[in-house]
Length: 216
Image 1 (cartoon, rainbow, N blue to C red):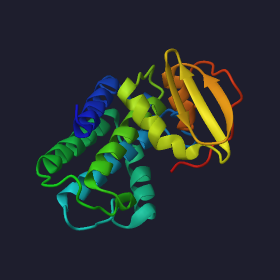
Image 2 (spheres, helix red, strand yellow; image 1 turned 180 degrees about the vertical axis):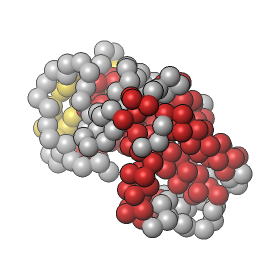
Image 3 (tube, rainbow, N blue to C red; image 1 turned 90 degrees about the horizontal axis):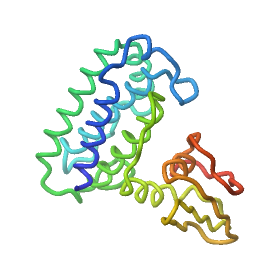
Image 4 (cartoon, helix red, strand yellow; image 1 turned 120 degrees about the vertical axis):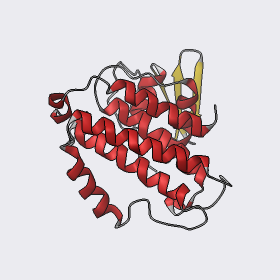
């Protein structure tokens, strides 16, 4: 699949995950400190619309969130209290807008304001957002594809501490990121990627876990 198809497929998985979500569950804490599941869902709707806007304004560098970070945070707070049905509807509308915007893209290498990157980069970003935040909803196991593991490790390699060569071992798969003194960590691919993303792994990881740098 293309990266755009991966991102849209992740949204389909999210829709299936919250299909039976109740209002009570929406108000419960997510795996992210200080955020309910409603906060996570409001954020996902907002970032989907924001990145759709990058494509809608192809050729013009615009903010993902008009008004910047304060406007983003305010929108999340305002949307967190929606009912489960409202969250599903808002997310469905956001994905519809995104799909239409992406269908109209002429050149995926067009520069955008987001991360001073390209439209292709926004598709990768949305893929990461949806896959990782689906896990943050804490509604049951979320399994990531080998393709997502590889992309996430590559993107999050910037979190490896200076002077460290981190070797992640997951069965017959192995990733090496960083340069310096070697640290080997062994676990499932989902757990290793979750830890690298700053999330609590579901299972055990063997080895001495270093302190990671902030998200890139």
